Image (cartoon, rainbow, N blue to C red; front, side, top):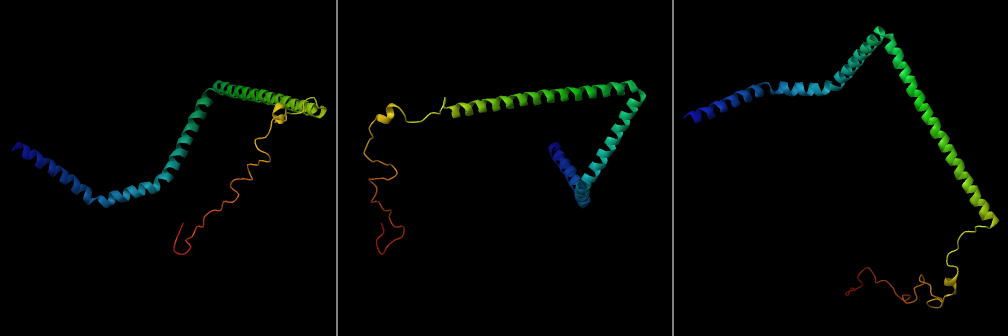
Length: 161
């Protein structure tokens, strides 16, 4: 008997909750649509408020302690100098590599023009003295398949094939 009352009570609670939701259902849908529509505007306002608050905290912190501000500015300037030095070193290294490439290219060109290094020719030496497989053989000519014709694509009359 008690098991039935528990089931009835839980069903009555569920029905009460469902009735409350059903009576204000369109209001809930309206609030959801309105919140989706207003979200970008509210997000922008929140971000600007947060930025303004952070700026005020920053200025208050450094207004109270000017030494802290000077120390921070020195650290920022030191970081800039390190980055500038790193950039200059990389630029110098790249310039040296480019000069080395140009020198190497000029040396190769001089060797080619002087004839000391003339490039390699394929198929020279003993392989040129060897006999050919067949006289006047050209694989692109296709000696054995000269008379081949492709079959027609359409049926001709009664018999196909």
